[in-house]
Image 1 (cartoon, rainbow, N blue to C red):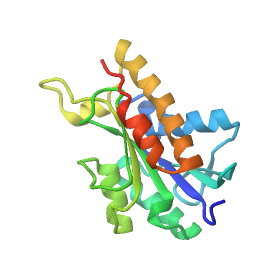
Image 2: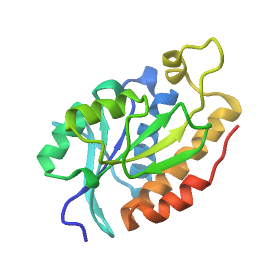
Image 3: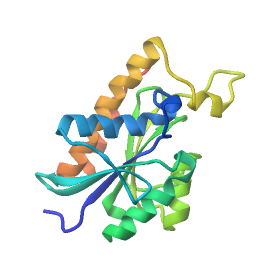
Image 4: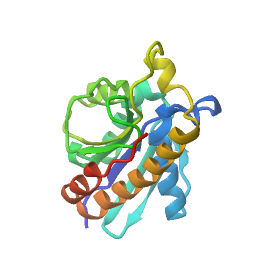
Length: 195
């Protein structure tokens, strides 16, 4: 059993206008986990929607920051300070432009890779030593601005691919919670579904 909760943070933007955008895949993974576990996330003083509870492997917390993606570090810092957790107790789930649509990449640490939500967390916490699970959304088509792309809604086959990736990402998170990073990295990093 863990002595400290493991915090899983799904990045996204609050508000109905952003709900189905590519940038909100982290939120979708948190919602999938909450639905699967039969729990409800509630608004908290930690600048986000939170659920805290028990898994067979120990305590865990889910967080969906309502600070918008680019300021996600505010919510993460508030929560980790309140709970007294270490970097190795954090897993961040987010979208990734550099991965093919539907591809997952789990890493134990690393740079922000150009993702402003990860950058905010690194800046507020002062470390890159936390795990992250990236869900590929692919690069924007020629002539489409990257901001417009991540804030756009996938359609057709792309929407199906990303919905399947969200389910696989939720499975990956559960595997990390139950057994650590090593086995899920082998299992989920190699399995790719794309357009």
